[in-house]
Image (cartoon, rainbow, N blue to C red; front, top):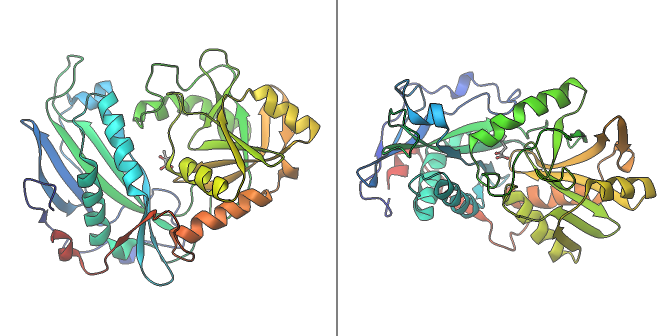
Length: 368
Ligand code: COI
């Protein structure tokens, strides 16, 4: 690995768990592949890059990240095409976003080139875990956290960077079925100046209670509004969100409180390629509901790495539920899903060069 001071060491499992994993019943993040990438930060540098068996890690109860959440993560996917070629979708975007998340949480930044090499190494090592079926993928989950045991509220002096992988189906199931959203009017996810745009676990922890309340009422997710006026749409639990009014697509602008999604960026690019007007701006929830009443709101969909493109069929505010496109996936939503997944599985050309090809060849080759 050219971007590391130390060479990559590789310790492979003696017995793979691959054959005991049911690829017909994957769910999301229920199975982990045989290995993980590991690296440690100590005395001012990232060291000991290694591929090791996936398994428990020793941590002291005083580990700072457990108490004060000094931890950030990423999510990206590797796909196996019908040509058997392995493609990782836009790892450069995740690498840069992780660097920005690290900066926000006072974690030593992992150089994006090194992040990408580490992803390539673990995907190559566990390539047999990449499912072959359309709709499935190998989800790649990098995480970095402070490991120094201390109880002062300050940045840790030591960190661990791990990349685990998990064969998955799409987040809301294999089919493109509409999800139902509950507009959250009380709780908020993030406020200006906070950590909303960082991919840090605390944002997800804060979403659990409203998410559970939404699910108790029969909805898949909470739809977040802004933290000051409770008026403007922000994002959904695990996705960014898009609204099609006529032939204009509107999505909340990146103002520091929402996650700058890789799929969000890809959708905007593909829409503009096709001549659609895309507005990144503040969007009041009232404008959405008015569009639903008047019929100008034609489609709503979420976009995220885990969820890919998920049509939204119902939005509930207070006691009123608004149906979008008769609770059917919209035409543009379906076209975007097909376009993005065709690029990811290598079934169409990749006009923006988004795929990183990973050479086939067995595990030890990852050490090259
Ligand atoms: C992703 O789409 O990769 C996410 O991070 C969502 C995840 C929390 C399930």
